[in-house]
Length: 130
Image 1 (cartoon, rainbow, N blue to C red):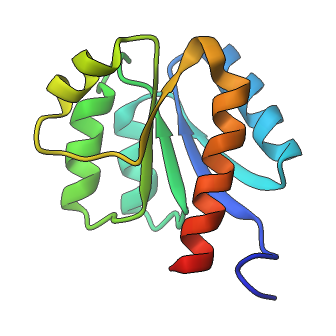
Image 2 (image 1 turned 180 degrees about the vertical axis):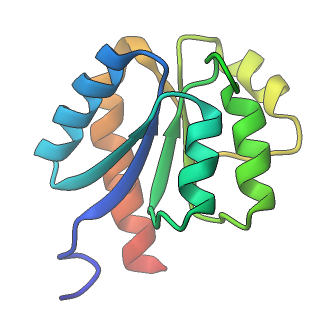
């Protein structure tokens, strides 16, 4: 089975169980495998424990560990694949918060369904080219 035929694996990180469930259901309809974490620390544990995902979609504002801190730590673990931010915060503010850390895209929670379709396309293109 080639990369274009296999399901992509996504780690979805958000402290809102409602957002996790809605996004997971939506992404699974786009032929993806979705794993979830409710904060940055959980996401780090999953990556450290060997969860192999093609992309991470991360909220910024979460208890326990915020998204920026999680992205920084995940980067030090050697994760080099796609990371998308999913937030209601302005893009400029997110870019300032990230500093030197780069992400594959910033999603606006108010336009989530359209944004998720574009994210899946982007990940599939990266896998096909990668």
